[in-house]
Length: 138
View (cartoon, rainbow, N blue to C red):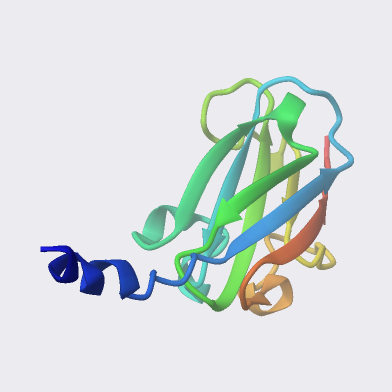
């Protein structure tokens, strides 16, 4: 009876899923939440709603200095963050300009519109870190 359990005990545990430790700086205030999107799909960046495999989460703005995002597997990802100050789960706009803050992994230069996936993407191989500086247009 004891030997029948032995294969269960010696089976290899699945490798842990990689995580991205995110540090956010430059928040205008601690109101609301951060909407976080992690995607490996260039066509779904920065709006993860088009990527069923994306990781989406909300983090209270007061706790946004450091948090972890679990990546589905090793790979190339990009992160988009919105400071949803009024907690309505979307980025508010005023005449095509964001009224709320935003940021991206690797802190690419922002021109007209969101950066391309390539400029915000980074490799995840095990646990990884990203520092994101928030930007506010209004």
